[in-house]
Amino acid sequence: MAAWDKRDDMLVHGQDPFNAEPVPTALYGHDLTPVDAFYTRNHGKVPLADPEQWRLVVDGLVGTALRLCLDDLRTGFEPRSLVATLQCAGNRRAEMAAVREIVGEDPWQRCATSTARWVGVALTDVLAAAGVGPAARHVAFGAPDVSSLAHPPQTYGASIPLSKATGPEVLLAWEMNDQPLPAVHGAPVRVVVPGYIGARSVKWVDHVSVRSEPSDNYFQATAYRILPPQVDPACAAPGNGISLGPVALNCEILQPGDDDRVSAGPVSIGGYAFAGDDRTVARVDVSVDRGRTWQQATLRPQSGPWAWRLWTATVEVSCGPVTALARAWDSTGALQPESSAALWNPKGYANNSWPHVDFWAD
Ligand code: MTE
View 1 (tube, helix red, strand yellow):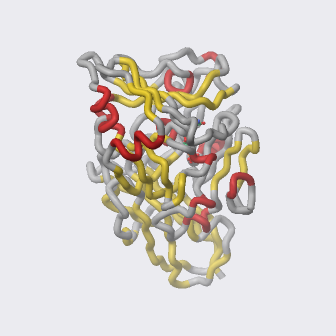
View 2 (cartoon, rainbow, N blue to C red):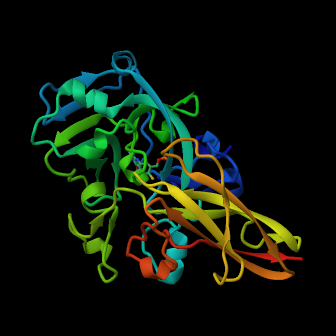
């Protein structure tokens, strides 16, 4: 086992903070990602919180501020369970970095995305217990982990619009795939914001604050924003760029892998597709002739409205090198953009261009 009970074959981008993604074969074919393969993204040391000591403060623009222990959450609110995919905004950055250098960010490949069944309570029920005031527009989350990557160093935080926070799908979760939440994934309680970039699903959450403005935490105000290509991220000020919320429509090829050798003839190609927030994946196509013709993939049944869609297609390949491309369409008729060059941004976020793998057929 690698650190934090992860599989030995995880691609580890850094030990401290611990950042790791599974190899494509560990994701392939699983509707739910086994916990030991679930990617993990951290900006500081993993806090080891004692569940008995843990408290959640709910304050800001509320009628009654709350201070809840784990038992208050478990017994005071209706338990909810749902399957949701988390996707890091830096997923597939490596491809973007191949277009033009991206300084100071980990080169995540195709697998900074994973899916689990989460159990907890709906944030909206907790907000209702506190009573949300009329000036409320955003809900901010705070956590105890300190990040020296932030300017200035600070604890991790994020926020989401009140309209999202009051959706029944946003959870304060303590269970992941029928196990208590592991430390590295936010024990004892984390936020799960289905359909939004992973950065908004704050782990080890200890503070929920109802506000009129988004959080001014570094990870909301300055990072996780699409900056114009000419801007040096080291000089970006709070509020610069486009703040990321809902995940961009994306898909990836998990099998075959780059440099695999397959037999010429029918070859099975498969992967995941994910459409953020209120959109769904409507279709995935595959091409093995550089996009001249496309074949429609078969979508597997979805494990719930907030889960990715796994897909497979069988294509005919002749002997020699093969490049397979994929592209997903969503329920609004939107298609992924073709090129990562067109999407390049200084922090390398939201690469949702057509994925490709290069393999060899004998
Ligand atoms: N929450 C805290 N407190 N600290 C963090 O560093 N990382 C965020 C989010 N929540 C983070 C956090 C990011 S960028 C992502 S993509 C997800 O957690 C990753 O969740 P995971 O490690 O459970 O996969």
